[in-house]
Length: 252
Length: 294
Image: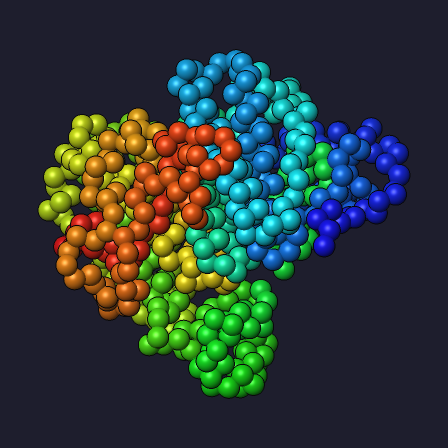
């Protein structure tokens, strides 16, 4: 069975894609950072674009697979992105970061690297040969020297991107939970998602003190955090990855 | 939601499951009729009702799990209600008050949501779960001073324990939309825990440097000789072995510090995963159970 299913067809031309895809990506970032409420709109626009052609040149197509291993690969893909992001934060000089924040982000970087490496080990152990490859991150929309983007900036600051990643990660695990069939995997996912939620709340508080569980993220009436299904999440995460990801069979 | 798939999976682990339903045909017929009458959103509740009926007397029902969640939420709700009425809160900064108010608002919402779900499953929501006034009166500061005598010190314990408690029951809701709701509450509790920790000058995540690390709530195993099997009238799973302690560095048989190719510190390995707690542990007198009362 192929882990590299041909989402858009192997021989489709990629003419013009590299020219206009980055612009779409940038707009993604701005919306994603600006307001979570616009997520539905972004998703609608994104998934449509994504089905029109293959991903950016330079990356292949990657199917996350089906069933529980699909869910594990899905988590592994998201953790790869987060780990790569924080690894780059660690080696960057972010203007305005306090020593305490730098130390905190080093710890977050370790947590995410552990999540990534753990999933890699678990998938290779439980589903040999079914793991997705290492992904090539695309952080062209992030300015790693900036703490928070100014209104005039086109790129996300480090905290904006961290918030987007962490909130998306929480919604992703919350939505994927019910797709998991093996209770042991569910418990592990639960053990990780609450750490992501802690990160998300921490980063939110850095951007705006007291916004750890603000009404834009936690429904003011139900008190529920967001939950998103794999295809919705990947539609957003796709902007950060060179490879074209296919989450259509995850959990099925 | 793939209803048939869930039934089939249940049949895999429990060959008798179909016999537990009145009959497969009857169940699906009634589901079809009911589904026509009700909104799509009601289907998970109906489905859970089937399971509840099928498994009555054999293990915890979804209602039992929801009652447990409601117990925790009522407990937290009452705690924050007491905080809001206290002198230390009155003297706190506007920012700190706003944070407590936001958290309390969520606990109120969770209580309402869980009560509605339990009622929808023909259950009677538990009531009268309060934080012991005598213990609350010993919390003399808002967020400074010793953790055990500060309101936010106890809030941190409650939130961190809540995070662990939801994890401990998630497996019983496997594959259901109720699980999604539980997870959506669970991550909010984690956000609360993170912020309370920030307010107290602690790291957002559980770590060996926590000033509460030695508190009984973080220790493993129940301390009373007879674990409760029922609490406030609903059943909880039998206590088996102690749940992992928070400084655990081994997950799913993988030693995080040394088996991942890259070495990681024990502190990072422990903090990267929150642990679960079984209901018998959470409700034990050494933990939340000991703080429940008039």
